[in-house]
Image (cartoon, rainbow, N blue to C red; front, side, top):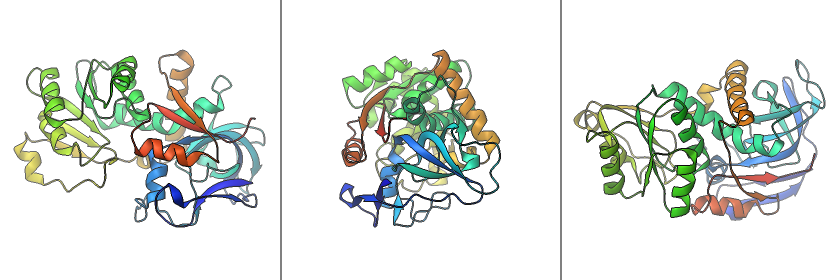
Length: 331
């Protein structure tokens, strides 16, 4: 099979396209013939070595990139139950989808309804599950809750806005261009603004009736963190779920106290899809929304194994709007 690997951490130049033997599924694993792989910032961060010391996403080159995909079950490892060769599946938080075949822990895979294409599943699952737990579990969102969503035109941002609006929230989204502002508004954002601290803090204060917003969802990190704190009302919640602008600085407890007895959390998807039941329940909600049309996912561009470096560059340079996918095979 063909696969995209890294032997060391670095920029797009460390990506290697290789012919490799087919992987063999071990106990509790399935092998999937990959149709489509999702392309995520997590892949970029893996390539850069940001998860080298992570307890949840430990990496050790050489490894095959890609943490999300969709395809057809091709082989079963020992002790696998509930799956059959030929089943349509999707998965995330399991590496190896930048390849023609991937070995996936059976419990991490979810059944793919006939109405959901491989492309849509690979575009929606990782970011959809992330947006789902953020909106439904991390913050107490209800009618009239005011929220600031940074990177509102990104894949997670657009889905998060949709989930928040379904729960009755008012949403302000930060964006970096008119095109991205339009994308965030199509997702349901009530207002958009730029990333300049004074601009989004002022807009958040206005959305919250002069007091600030109830919740800030921040995946940007150091470039926005101080402003995110300033944008919150008293007793507000700061949810830092990513650091796309670099490693986030330490937050001093008194900084939260002085800003209004704020709450802070740094969640991870792995803890909210820690077993098959949680993974399948969230995926079922996501797929139902996509089938019914209450959720929309826009696929911006398609890449191939030979051109995936261009996808990484587009993500790093903030040129992407929505989700890009990796076309692996026509199944």
